[in-house]
Length: 317
Image (cartoon, rainbow, N blue to C red; front, side, top):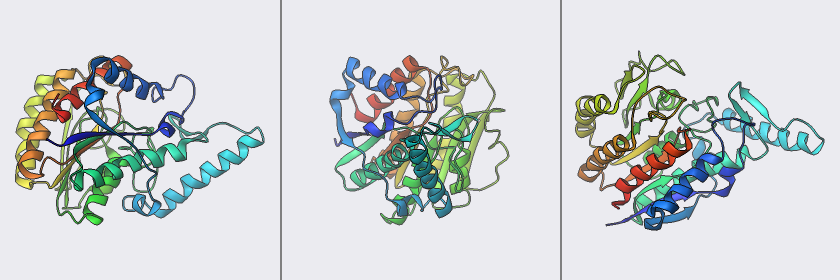
């Protein structure tokens, strides 16, 4: 069996959005600590993420969006030298500091490097322990803790740079991946399947009409067994019929029952089960090729345990 890659970068720890913000560097520390304690970390091929080339970001994002974030970053760095504000707010929940630009480049770069390594057969699959997350970042604007859409960038990259014809995106974050949908809706080369709590932030996804989307809005307090049933009924037939050549996962773990940012009832065992179902599809149609990237997950203990469960399945340990 091929190895499972683990892509991250120290720059991802330097992006901060203010004291008490749930999307904090401690999330990555919690994952690292858990993987160390449980021993799963020993089974992974660790790689440092390179920064994403701007031309590859522009496969999914408007050039003006990329340029605007870079400009904001430059301004922040200048302001700080003269005692100016340490943060620049994109929306009430989403802010840049002087390190955000490099962190965002590393987060997207991780998914691109993982795609290259998996396509080359160096790795069977990969997980990107990165932040900022990506699935709320739209074609032309940042929002919801996200700046660049790491998974959408990688999916477009696999199609455009590696010549694949069909890729799937699986999003199991508690929030609808509105940014990913904005970027991929109507692109018949990409099948996106997701479930998400509804009604809930960002209040999208329940009425989407594009034929390449399988959106499963579920009410608050939905538990794992109900989600598993939906996966079998709604996701699996579409994934099997689509026969993706590679699968990308927006791996948000905030639908966990211990996570206060959502009100769903999943457990680590549910994440392991979902990952196994995805892996089965990848084995049948995609030579096992999977690239997964961290999205949400804000209860640190639940996050660590859930990523462990996800990686145990990916790495077969």
